[in-house]
Image (cartoon, rainbow, N blue to C red; front, side, top):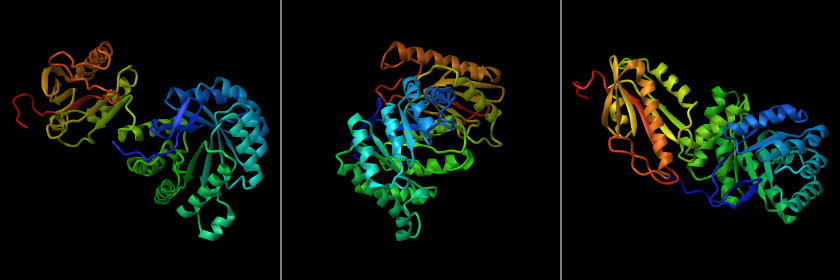
Length: 394
């Protein structure tokens, strides 16, 4: 849907980043890394929820010593987050991590940068230059007056040049800022100045209440412009929430086609049933099913129900006391309110079985839903409201 910025491609473990590779989702553990068992539990939770890459903090030697076990049993590429210490960076490289994150504001000695570049180059391990508004070099702050977009980009380009001077080019870069407009400006400017893959994120975004909105605006704006190759939604919350939010951002832009997309009306006085309860029940029960990608629309009146669900492959339009199960606007049958969700999910399972049986998916049996072909195939389901039953005009 969006013309991607042309960037070089690197590989973090088994995950390609940049070029035409899918945009990956990352998070970071909140455990003490030297607690191997607890860290692995969280890594596995993140991977199960869809994390492509997981970063772990390495502030102490004990954390670095824990890395070999975490890398061996993590199940996803592991990135070591390093600040200040070249010694810890080298220990992480020797432990076999799949990537390093270094902050140029916290590793300022060019000789240390050279040592890390040569060590990573020898092992084929990529490096992310993680520029952060809160830890810029003091000289850049003095020059620009504050951590502006230009200051972030200047720091990133300087660090890129240092690594490339030593023949190292497996680089990705982030220029994170807690101010969303400043973050967007920084990435736009950096995208014009280099072809390295870009890691998007709003730093210190806060709790989910505000952080998800900030991240969706900042990350989403850039992705819609074709900028960005991997993302992290930084939240003051369980890191699993970062993965959920990141995947939703990608799905909302049509950049990831997996799981289900719930489209629900806000409800109003026109609704013929409790749309809130219906949407929550559908969401909870669909999450437990093994289904292909589906869009589920939950609506509750004759105004939005049939109109916005007209092209739905599967839907239920709810009137008083009963609802109409339909496919592509064709009636399948009437169902009492109490059985709406069961009927919807039974039809969804039938369609899912047909999809799997037909490979890429031919058209379903007449009267059933149409399955779209190709890698971006989406199946659409809807719950709508048609008001007063078959005799009521819209």
